[in-house]
Length: 286
Length: 345
Image 1: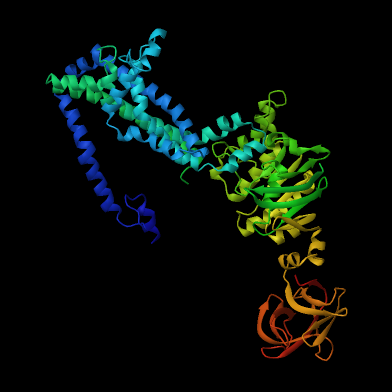
Image 2: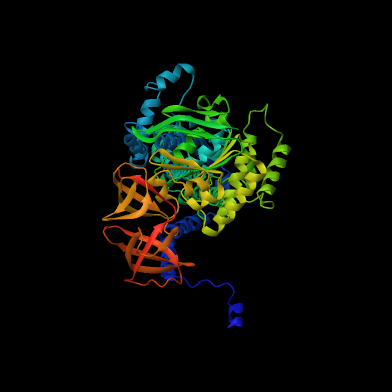
C-alpha cells in the first residue's frame, strides 16, 4: 500500500468528487481548437508561404510599422483613459443612489450593443471641422477627426464598458468596514482612496485594462470613419490588412495579422502574469 | 481618558436605535456592552468612535466635546468583528498604516514606524509573520493584527466590536484571557461589545446591559448577576426561572397558599424570578412552592427537574443534587434562596 502511494506521484487526473473532468476537458480542447486555434494556425500557415525574407520585408515595411505603432499606441492610450474614467463611472454607480442610476448603468453597455460603424459615423460628425465639438476645437488649433486623436476617442468609446463591468462587481464587494478602519486610523478621504481602496481593486483594474486594450487593438468599424486613413499618419493595422486583402495580397495580409497576433498575445500574457501574481499575493479567490 | 456619553439619542430613518443613553466610563476601565442583537450596543460603540453622529446628545473625551470632532481627529482604536484588515498590505504595513498616514509634521520616520510596528507585533505575539498577507493568517491571528493596528496610533480609547464573534470557541477563550492580560499591561480605557454573557462577565470591570436601545443596568459582573434590577436582566444574564404569583399584604401567594416569601410591593399580580440552582428543598408542610416532577435530566454535577406546580399553569425548573431521590411523578417542595419579585406589567 505504502509503496503504491510513493509510486503514484503526480497524476494527470486526480480522483475528484466532481465527475466529468475527462469529458469536459476534451470538449473544451476540441471547441477551442475548432473556434480559435485552427483558424489562427491557418493564419500563421498562410503567412509562412512568404518565406522568411518575404515575411521580414512586410514586417519592416515603414507602412506596416507605422500602422502597428498607431494601432497599439492609440489602443494603449485609450485603455489608460478608460481605466481612469471607467473606475470613476463604476465608483459613482456603486457608491451613490441617485435618480436615473439604472439608466446610466444601462448606457454604459451601449458600446457593446451598437454596431461600431454607427458610433464611428456619429463621432466623426461630432468631431469633424464643422461638427458640434469640432468647430469649438478648431480655433484652438486642435484637430480630432482624421488624426490619431480621433482614433483614440473612437477606441475609448468601444472600450469603456469593459473597464466598468470588470471593476464594478469587485468594488461592490469592498466592505464598508475597511474604509471605516482607515478612517479610525486617521486616514483622510484621499489617503483612504489611494492607499486602501484602489490598491485593493488593482487586479480588477488590470483585467479591465487588458480587455479594453485587446478590444481596441482589434477594433475596425468605428475607427475607419474617424481616422481619415492616411497612410503613415492615421492608418491602423486592421485597415492595412483589409487594404492588402482588396489587393488580393493574401500572404501580405496574413503576415501583418500574424505580427499583430504575436504582439497581442505577448502583451496579454504579461498582463495575465501580473494579475495572477497580484491575485495570489492579496489572497483573492481563496 | 474618561469618556462620558450624555443623553445620546440615535435614529436611523426615524427608527430609534438608542433612546437617551448616558454612560460614564472611567479612565483605564474595561467595559462590556452586553445585549441581544438589536439592543443598540454596536450603535453606541460606533457613536463613541464617531462612525455615527448622534441625533441628540453629546460624547465627551475627558472635558473635551468629541461630538465636534471627526473620526480621524478622535484618535480612537477600533477593532471590527471581521477584522477589516487591508488585504493588499503585509501584516507590518497594516500595523504601521495609522502612523504612515499622519500629516508630515507628526509622522515618525519610516524606520521608526517599522520599529514600532514590529514592537507591537511582538507584543501581540505575532513576531515572524511581518511579511505575511492577511489572507495567509488564521482568524485569531488576523484579530491580533487588527488589535496591534488599532494600538499603533496610541489611541485615547480602545473600542472593540464583537472582537471574538467570528472565531471558534477555543480560540475565543484563549483570546479572551489574552485581551485581559493586554489590558492589564497597557491600561487603555477599553469598551467592547458582545452578546456573549460569559465573555462580558469574565472579562469586564463593569458590564452595561442593554435592551431595545436603552441601558437596563450598569454594574460589576457580581452586581448584574446577583442583583439584577429588571426582569430583562434577570432572564438575560445567567439562568432564571419565572413564576406568576400574587402579592397580598406583604406576602407572596401561589394560588391558595402562601409560599413563605415577603415583598414590599402593593397587592396585585407579580412575577417571581429566581436562579434554578439557588433553591432549598423543604418538606411540604411549611409555606413553600410544591409541585410534581414531570421531567428530569442530568446537567453536570447536578440534576435539573421540571416541576408542574399545584395551582399554577407555569412550569419551573430547579436544580437538585444528583443523588436526590426525586423521580418522575414524585412530589417535591422548595423555596428560592435568592429571588426578586417584579410587578406584572
